[in-house]
Every structure is written in C-alpha cells, then in structure tokens.
Image: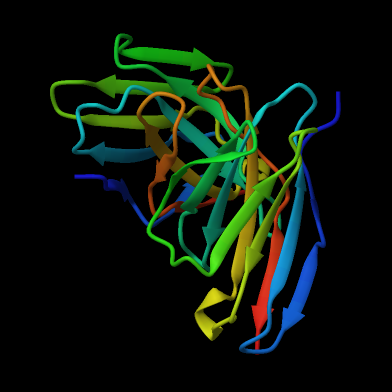
Length: 111
Length: 112
C-alpha cells in the first residue's frame, strides 16, 4: 500500500513535443505529490507539486494532472526541449514525513 | 541563502568498514531526511531527524544510524558496510510544517 508505480520506464520525445509521465498510488492518506527532475550525478530537484484538493497545476511548461478517484497523477512537459533530458521521479507523502518515490522515467528529447 | 550541501562527493570503502556522511541543511530548515538511491532506482527513505531526534525510519537495519546537530546539520553513519550499500546517499532538508524537501547533490558511496 506504500508503493508508487511510475510509467513508462523510458521515453523518447521529439523536440517541441509533449512528454507525459504517469504515476499511481494506493494509500489514500497521501496528501502531497511532488515531481523531481534528476540529472546524472546530481541530486533530485523539485519541479512542481500538487495536493489532492486540486485537479491540475501548471508552472511554465510543466503541468500536473491529478485524478483523486483513480489515484493517479501525471506530469506533462509541453514543448519539450533537449535540456529536459533527465530522469523524472514522482513521489507521494503523508504530511511532512517521508517521501515514497516512483522508480523513475528516463526522458530523452531529440533535437 | 545556501542550498543543501553534502560531503564528501565520492567515497570508496571496503566491505566491513564504517563510513560517515555529512549534510548541511538549507538555511532556516530544521528537518533532515536521508535517502539511499541505488543505481537506476528511486530514492528510498532511510530516516528523518527533527530537533536532534530520529523522527521515523524506513526499512533499513540498525547499522544505519544518524545524528542531527543543534545547527540542524546531520550525519549518516553506516557500520559493517556491505556490497549492497553501494549507492548515492541523498540528504534532504525541509521545514517541519511544510511538505517541500530540498535535496543535496548526494554522496556516491562505493563498497568494494
């Protein structure tokens, strides 16, 4: 019940395209859902986050869509750029406690 | 405002040895969480410290221990190192009543 399942494992997108990464969770007590971007050899950097009382949140080219009834949330990267090539992790937490991370999606944006 | 810093950047140890990793929190943050990230995997929660006390622990054995100091910096200690302990160890700092956790660059530990 503590798992966060993330898909796809890897994704290749053309420059200017839309990248979509999906996550699903089981624990309905989770109340905070962040997305992190990680470049090789670096720590994860917070991209955007959402709470379950909101169905969508947009920050620049990054959008989170949240479906509380389906217990799913997704990250959309609009106008994907080669500089977006990285590994993306979704996570979930209850309160301010530990994050449960997904297994990651390796995104490659072709120039 | 300085971000989360970790030291050392890289470390090579042999099986059975002990290691200490260090983390300095982002300015003003009072909570530190440690994560282990194996190659190609998502980070796994080890434990969290608040007010110099352990505030929850993940599925890691007692040979993983930690400390938090009055200035909110923290240490992760691992005894009796095993080959499977080879990973990137991440420290994340946060404010107690806020969800956002900010990660440092990590320490890459290799156990031979």
